[in-house]
Structures are given as structure tokens and as C-alpha cells.
Amino acid sequence: MPSPATPIPAADLQAETTDLLQRLIRCNTVNPPGAERSAQELLKGYLEDAGLSCELLGAEPDRPNLLGRLPGLEPGPRLCLLSHVDTVLAAAADWSHDPWSGDLAEGFVWGRGALDMKSQTAAEAVGAATLARSGWRPPRGELLLVAVADEETGGELGAQWLTREHPDKVRCDYLVNEGAGEVIPYRDRRLYGVCCAEKGIFRFTLTTSGVAGHASIPGTGDNALVKLAPLIERLGRTRAGFDLAAEPRAFLRALGESDDDPQGALARMRDVDPKLAILLEPMLGVSFVPTKVVASEKINVIPSRAQVQVDCRVPPGMGEREARTRLEELLGPEGSDSYQIEFSERVPGNASAMKSELMNAIGAWVAEQDPGAEIVPTILPGFSDSSHFRAAFPDCVAYGFFPQRHMTLQQAAPLVHAADERIDVRDLGFAASFFAELPRRLLG
Ligand SMILES: [Zn+2]
Image 1 (cartoon, rainbow, N blue to C red):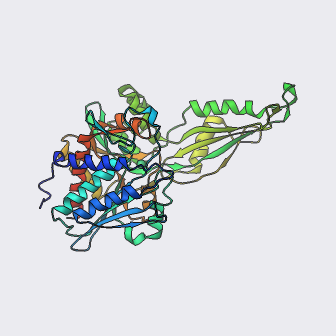
Image 2: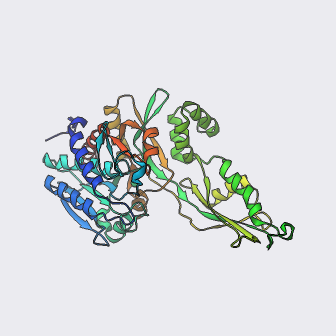
Image 3: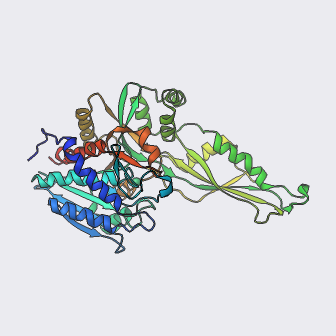
């Protein structure tokens, strides 16, 4: 039986994790429609063979969620390893390997889901299965493995449904999910992000008003679309001031930067690595992206009203007030003769405490596996299923962490939801060794 003093080497788990990932990629789970059952049946068989007790639970027959458990000997905390098995679509013509081939070539597994996130599903399953086959059972608490359906369209049939319909089965004290973990080389440092929070979504419609008229005589009207254009330009090209939540403050300090000077920190980050700066900048404040425009319905009518929809993301702990403040900073005050806004979505961000036993366990593992490397808190600009667990179980400490040391954040991030998504097979073994070790540290 392995003990915490003898970690399972990554190399021992690489082949098994690679094989499981290849088989998961070959189950086409593009959502919509999802059709996750084949992937879930595959995982269920794999985990049951190893000794976990499993069940499939779902709102629709073809779209079940999988729960696998390894109960402990004494009461204690429950650790949940979470992932989703659905993926976004893929345009095969743009790929150098078929997106559902799971090809192993040039040291990578290729396919849709290789990063987001069947790789983590496979690594979590291999970690849990390795422990179960060795005869290990949690001395206290419980190890729970949850693979959900339907994350890519919001989680209605997956994490939302499970936490609402079966809270007792999935309530957990610690949760590890997607969101961070690729190594971030920075000057001479090696930083592993641990995602502790997610930004909120405060989408709105911005309207300008004018006077309708016949388009054959330009002077007859007051064109609302022409008034809107410079506002779109400013929203798209100017960045608002910074609003730093606690996690990015800690992140900047870990980079050796002052959290009182985010402007300077961002400039230096751009000097060191412009691609990294693009990925990290959204952590530092409110963002506005204009995405949809509507004006006249007729080509020969000067529009009296023009509207742009804006996807606005707000740091955790902040909300509409900060969004409005930053908007007015860019566009001047709202008013009937300038512009008016109406929010269509107000979903605050969410967060887990940065200090916890889970954070300590992740930090200790990273320090052992990659000497000199450090962990740093990050926030996700988008959302993940962690938000549903944090909402349902306020005491749950949920982090995004899937360790990768061979592929950096800069290499991996552009491949997510893109063509030629792939993962370095050495990182599959590396991550699986983490998931085989974490339960022994937290539930021991
Ligand atoms: Zn994902």
C-alpha cells in the first residue's frame, strides 16, 4: 500500500492516463447536444473495476452525471475531484489530427477535450483508481469523484442539477476542478496558479437616441448609429482603471510587483512576456467587450435608436456599482442626450478563501515535485462549475487546479476551444500523480 512518504511517480501513471484520455476523446460529447452517456459508461466501468462504487444520475437518459466514491473508515472531510466530460464543437477541417481521434503523436494526445477538460477527468480517475486498487481507503472522510455533463452551456443538467437535486450526495468540504495549474514561467520564477475565484457577469445594453428620417436626405434625421460608433470605439480600445480583488493583489506580490501600481506591473509584464500579459490582464479589473449591434431595421431609414450589447466582467466582491463607475470613466456620464444602459445579467463573482488545508496540500506537493516553484492564487475571467458548488455549499473550499509543468499557461491557453487542442503526455502522468497524492494528504 502506498503511504504519503512514497509518492507514486508520474511516469508510472502516464501510460494509463494517456489511454483513458484517448478513449474519452473518442466519445464525441460536443455540447449541444452533449450525449455524454458513452463517456460516463466508460468511466463508470473503469472506476468500478478499480473498486470505487459508482452511480449515474441525470435529468435526461442520454446525459447522466457520474459519481464515484471511496468511503473512509472514520467520519471526516469529503474531498471531491470534479470535472466535466462535455466539450465545445470542433471544425475538423482546421485540425491537423481528427478532433475525435485521440491520436498520440509528437508526444501529445490530440483532440477536442485534451485540455478542456477530459485530461483532468482522466487524471482524476486514474489517481482515484490507483489508490483504490492499492487497497487504500481514506482513514477519515470520503473521496468523491464527480464527472458532470453539460458544463459548456452553463451546467443546467450537470453541476447545477446535481447540487440542487442531490445536495447530500455531492456536498463536499474540498473541491478540485478546472481553472488553473499550468506552470507560469516569469523571469526566473516558476509559478503554478491555483484558481480561487471567478469574475462576475454584468452584461448590459447601451442605447443612443436620435431622430428618424429618410436616408435620401441625410439632414432630416439625427442618426443614433453615428452617435453610437465612437462609444463602441472607446469601449473596445480604451481600458478602464484597475479594480484589484484580494487574489490578484496576492498574485502581483508573488510576481515581485507592487499591488499599489497595477499599471506599472502590467507594463513590466508586457515587457517580459506580452502573451502572458494578455492572459493575466483580465484579473486586474472590470472589462467591457462590445459584441452585438442593432440599429435601423430598414436600409432607407435613419435610425432613431441604436444599441450595442456589452459583455462586462467584474472582479469577485464587486458589482454593478464598479461596472457603472468604470463605464462613466470611459464614456462620460449616462444621460438622455449621451447614452443609456440597461443591465440584462447581474451575476456576482464567487470565491473561496485563499488560505486552507487544501491550499497547503497543493503547495506542499508542488514544492516537492518542482523544487523552487511556487503556487499563486489566480482568478478566472470566465466561469466554471466551481461557481455552482460555492453557491450550494458556502463552506466548501473550491479551487481550480490541474498541474501541468511541461506545457505552460502561455502554450495551453490559446488551444482551449481552438483547433489542434492537445496535451503533453508527460503532464498527464504529472497530474495523475497529484490526484493520487492529494487524497492521502487531505484525508489521512
Ligand atoms: Zn471546461
